[in-house]
Image (cartoon, rainbow, N blue to C red):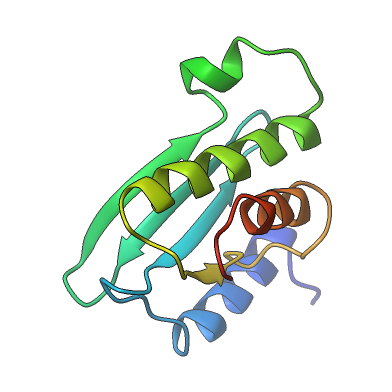
Length: 118
């Protein structure tokens, strides 16, 4: 029987998470994509803490007009700004089982343009 989209994503996610871990010097940039919003967390897996979180529901981004892809790019840019201000220059990108296209790709490219090394 064929897998549902959710089951497929969960399998990919668990397979990748066996390998990808974040540290304090190089945290994991985890992306979650809902139907309306996109969320990003910088996670230190060694300590089990979230260092920073940004979403498209934030006041700076929610007040602006644009498509979901454009808002994802804004989230990537804001993430890069906040991370650089916190002294984080390198991150490990965790697309969380989503395909690397559309909003996830826009977010990653905007974060790279913002100065983060992925």
